[in-house]
Image (cartoon, rainbow, N blue to C red; front, side):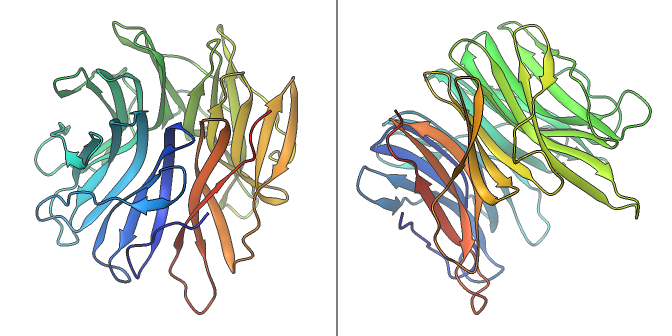
Length: 361
């Protein structure tokens, strides 16, 4: 699908969300020219064309991105990320709202003091007055997870269970209802033999509770995305890490499922060997589970339908490098994927990329 590229440097989509086949948003970042400045990017599919939609630029910030988007209605969408500066000024949370006519910046809190960098990585909504965003703050050389909630009036920080001492982040969030919110990331391992372990938090309408999970890989598992299905099943994706005989870190795709009682790993054929990765996960209204990432055959999709995983090839743009699969959603009756590609080795600047599936049966 032809997509806009407003900059001459790198252009990339990180996430996608939509309410129908004629209302889909993709967000990311573009470089006005190679390397700097870097500004937020938002594009809208209206059923016919992807169009670049101007996003306000925070004052005195020239290193800005939108990492995630959640579309609620044609006149209601949220996109989150961060806004910093190459001059070293503080990086702060960035939250923008689409009201049907334009994007505007909505004030959002930051953890720590004035020198603490804050980043938002994911957003999800149960309704117009019930929106969640997660990410991390980097304080005293250590990252720690943060969560924010929109109640229809303002964004506020929400307390989280302690992740322990050491680096920890939240990378994904999914909402089924106001009392059923899941967020995933990683935290320091609480047992010897691993460096990290999944950090999974559940909001039940009153408080956030940490939920234990298995921890595969000699180095541990890092979760990056999560989705909740219509019957309450939860899937999370990430990386299962270990060290090679030479001491370097390597990984393969990790997929986990919560069955209502406990978390466990599940095997996805073609995503079960070293070097594979999973980007996003999405669940269709009929319960079909979709994954996107790099399998043993290259960038592709996996679909769980009727208890069986199927490997599904994506579009083939015949480009020099890519496409890199980043964001995934189901809008209308199609699966949508966004990311980036490199047109040729004569132009190493990436370009935005989008593809969609045929109508789902």
